[in-house]
Image (cartoon, rainbow, N blue to C red):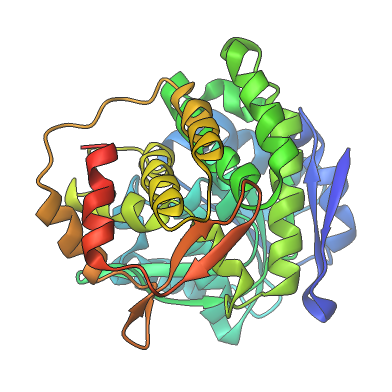
Length: 356
Ligand code: GLY
C-alpha cells in the first residue's frame, strides 16, 4: 500500500492508496474504532454498488455502523439537505464521538466534510473517494462546503479528514468519459509543479487504454499533499491548484453545471491559461505547444456553441477575486505555476478564442 502523509502538525493524516483497498477497510479502520457510531454518507447508486457491502463488512468487524443516504447530484450540497442530515444524525443519537465516512465523489466529500466540521462543533471523518477527481483532488486538503442559490461552495470551512482511503479499482465502475475527464486534473499537477511528470503523462496518454491510473493517482496525491502542507488555507501557494479553473469554472457555470464534466472544463481552461502564459512571455511557444498537445491527447467532448460574454460574466463573479483583483494562475515554464493579478479581462476574453 502506498501511504502519503499530509503534514499539518496536529491535523496531519495519511492518504492510503491500494487497488482492492475497500475490501480490507475494516481492518485498516479498526484502530480508530472505540465503539462509537460510524455513519456512511453516500448517494443511492454508490450505496447499491459498494456502500451496503462496506456497511456489512464493518458490522461484521464489530463497528456500530449505519448509512445515511444523500441525494444524487449537486443538490445534495444544499442548506436543506445539510439540515436534514444533521437532524437525522441527532435522531440516530449521534454524539461528538461519531465518525463519518464520505463514500463518493466531490459532492459527497464536500458535504460530509462540512457536516463533520459543524456537527456538535466538529466530529471526525474519513474520505473514501470513488471518482478520479475526488481521488486526486477534492478528498485531500480539507476543503468542505455547501452551495447557496447565488453560487457554489459559498458556505464552508477548512476541516481536515482523519485519513483518505483510495481504492483505484473503483474506477472500473465509472463510465469511460468520467475517467478521461479526471485525467485533466492529473495533467494539471504536472503542468503546475512537475515537468518530468507532465512528460511521462504525455507518453502514457499515447496509450489511453493502458493508462496507469494507480501510479498517476499516487503522484498527483503526493503533489497535492505537499502543496496543502505548505499552505493549508490557500493564502498563497495553494492557489496554484486553480490552474485552468478560472475559465473552467466559468464554462461549467455558463453551461449550468450540466453540459461539461469538471475535468474537461479544467482541460479547456488550461488551454486558455497556457495561451495567456505565452502572451505574457512566461511560456515559450514550444512549451505552450507541448501543454496543448498533451491536453489534446485526451478525447474530451467538443464544446457546444457558447457566447464568450456569458463566460466572462461568470469570471467576474469568481471567488478567486481578492481585493478587487483576479488572481490568475499561469505557468512560468512548464512545472512552475505563478499567480498574477495583472491579467486584464481583455486578455482573458481574447484567450477564449483558443477554445470557442
Ligand atoms: N481543489 C483545490 C484545492 O483543494 O485547493
